[in-house]
Amino acid sequence: MFFDRILGLFSTDLAIDLGTANSMVYVKGKGIVLKEPSVVAVKRDRHGNHRVLAVGRDAKLMLGKTPIGIQAIRPLKEGVIADFEITQAMLRYFICKVHNRRNLIRPRIIVAIPSNITQVEKRAVKESAELAGSREVYLIEEPMAAAIGAGLPITEPVANMVVDIGGGTTEVAVISLAGIVYSKTVKIAGDKMDEAICQYIKHKYNLLIGEHTAEQVKIKIGNAQPEDEGQTMEIKGRDLISGIPRTLTVTTKEINKAIEEQVEAIVMAVKDALEHTPPELAADIVDRGIMLAGGGALLKNLDKLLRERTGVPIFVAEDPLSTVARGAGEALENLSILKEVAIY
Image (tube, rainbow, N blue to C red; front, side, top):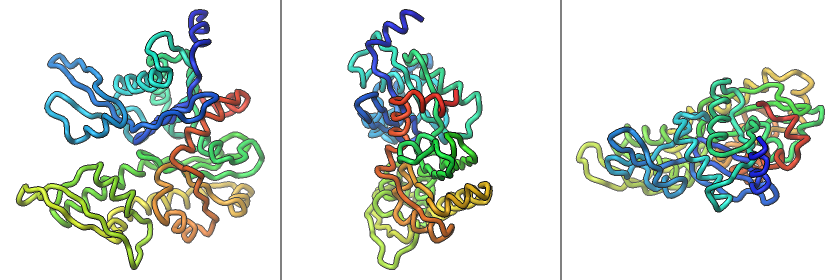
């Protein structure tokens, strides 16, 4: 313990948004210093042992392109750890990259996690962070971190409703007096939209495209509402009949149709939250509105659709991709807030 405290003097405390699609690291006193895809490329030998080849952007470029013996792995699925060892390696990489050295690093870490995961899943996150080299680990729920990052008054006796749409999960939460009054997690978010686009293109055009291509289509021409004059985009894939690569042009209307089921699930989660919110807090939400955070908040016209379906004002957080990381970082900077909102 004494040795850990000494090492801690030379380590900078970190807040990590450990996302299914992307991870961000906030350094105390500096802000967000690292944004990387949550992907690790490993080479496995015949004994099952693995060696990490790349992490983050470099590893993401390898998705779907690796030879036999090398795998590009996304170690988090639907907001929780699917591969403990790879997650540990990824965290160690982030810690070392931020500190620019590999040894004698024992930072305090706060990790943002989904709100409705099990105790076993929480323990897995905490243990992976400890084994990656931290001396002390705190966990904070993603909706709480998003609310702090969006500048909402979480400690006041008023309702703050947050919808955090990430890669693996959509988190809907009502927060008051530094606590979560109601929360709902649906395992439908950006990744499911990418899968839906892949399936739509496959079934309609007999064209096989990768997840990365589907993600780019969603980002560039995705829309939560159909438009008369939508955009178009050329995509490349493999023809399932001839086996030959070919190019196809898709429209905004087609992508809207592809992802409408996932968008509807997010709308229903928000409506369920409003129905289960106590009356006094519901009145606050009508006055104060709902804050959207996470990468999914950038889907064009999603805020407009939610406003039409709920009748409640909808706001998109400034830089929604980094809202959770900023909120976790602010909690790290302010220990009195951290003690109120930390859950483990």
